[in-house]
Image (cartoon, rainbow, N blue to C red; front, side, top):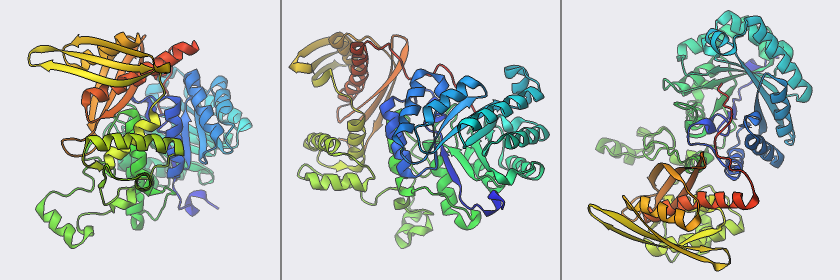
Length: 525
């Protein structure tokens, strides 16, 4: 029986931890990757592409750690068509009960001539050899002809045919540089379906980049033409303009079920919490008007829209906020709220915390409730994100003193508490309070850094809203990212900076070399 003709299920292949992480500034620590992988499993994605093990020792370790935890989805690793890459992927993913090796090689004329300098026949031999080797190690093998959308159709069909004969169980057709358009991509998939023998025996996949803003549209066009796996990322993060947005593709299929006649296995009520987790970890917050998970996605300001909404929500909403994990209420708790109410609200927002994390989060909530009258959902989320990502000392910010005057440098004093109750206090002068605070922290901790980026995001509404700060800094030539939150922006920045400094000091204490969040190799599909 034909797989495609009988299969009404679209598999969701999430590559947030591989392709998404390759976006500038989006690299993650091991603990962050584990949190995202767990969230993806709760979202019920089918496959998690956990990384590119050959890129660096850190990538290998993170893929292996994710695989060894057996969260549930298929755990996949990416490899070039060479023995070393394939063996590293297998070594990294084999701990998962279900695992996949994903091999790729470029096929377009421009890549053949300028990057690979290989003839068509050489590329096919390379792909076939890699697939056969991967099949000896693993029953689940995916093959991608990189830059497929710019590859001659007849040659692409030849490559795909050879891949299927060699044993590939999934063949992915990537629009690597976001070049194609929906009608053209539809034609490409239909051409392959007509000209490749045994193509109905494998899963056809699609992987689109968003350079022209059509990654989701192109992916859905491929689905209409027979693809049964969509490769995508949370919030559409990825290299350059990003990838196909998981939440948009999934909700398009769900909302227009009568048109597509297909379904995914995604628990859509987990979309918003997962989006928030990834945006907080990466520091890349979706625009307010981002479809599905943006702050304005379910907001209505125009009078005529508000009138229609009061009559019936379907007049201007094609989805319910609850369908993607948003709740109707926003104002939730105050200083007199107890631990039980707090735990219930955390659960309603879609987060799962253990007892230790709950206790820490509740303590931070009580501190925040003393500073502001009303605590909103966004405030609760910010607390959870920072509790989950916060790392232990050696230093903790005890207090902060800031002096600023118009047209004069700022003076900041930071007071830190270290392990064994050791205290450190340093002052510094800078062009502004953030610059002065960071200089004071450098003096107090002995860690020198260069601030590359400072991002501020409001966690909720109102004048007393928490500010979420994400900093990207350079230490000893490597880039690191830290996060902090507070109703005081300078304090939030200090917490973000101190998070990075603490990680650096712990590495130094262990004797580890500084390894930042950058890859020694990048794989673009």
